[in-house]
Amino acid sequence: MQRWMLYTLFIALGAAAGWAYWNWYGCVHGCAITGRWWTSTAYGAVMGYLTLGLVIPERGEQGK
Image 1 (cartoon, rainbow, N blue to C red):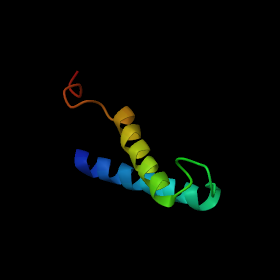
Image 2 (image 1 turned 135 degrees about the vertical axis):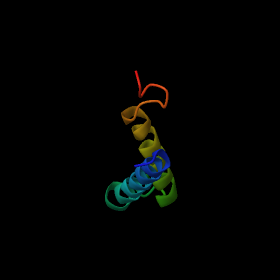
Image 3 (image 1 turned 60 degrees about the vertical axis):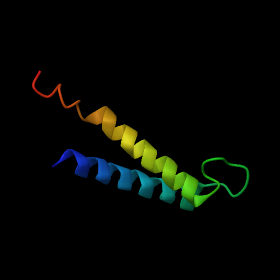
């Protein structure tokens, strides 16, 4: 799988997880991240991006 496809997949999964968290567990008032659906979704997308960065190696380190 190509690198950009993995990033797209993990960002989409993170966004879906952020939206699902808002839908089932998010608070109504006073929460900075889970109070609105779009902030929770954006936060999930960022977490998906960062999670993939932890899992796959750098481009130059694959041959070492």
